[in-house]
Length: 94
Image (tube, rainbow, N blue to C red; front, side, top):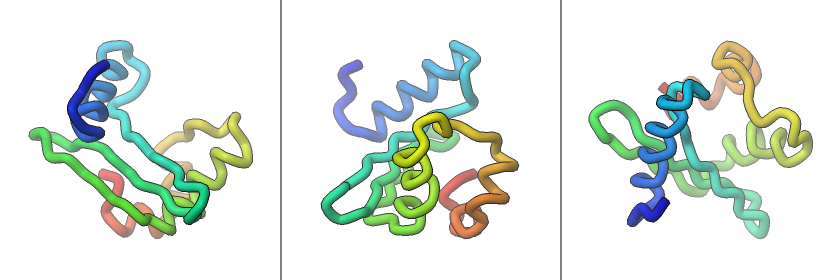
């Protein structure tokens, strides 16, 4: 894939996972180990890109869990909402 930016790459990944019946959409989370922060890139309906940088709640919630337990790379939306309600309330996830 050779997209010009992370939002375009995320859109291409979302289309790929939909066609493959793996997921409804995709997002890119970049972990910044030096600062203990995470950046989040995704797209919503009508090609609206989402970009969050310096996201501490994300970095210390789901990203920390994935780094400590690689077997938890995915979970149901219900489990996600129960585990990290502050992320759901913040509007980061549709």
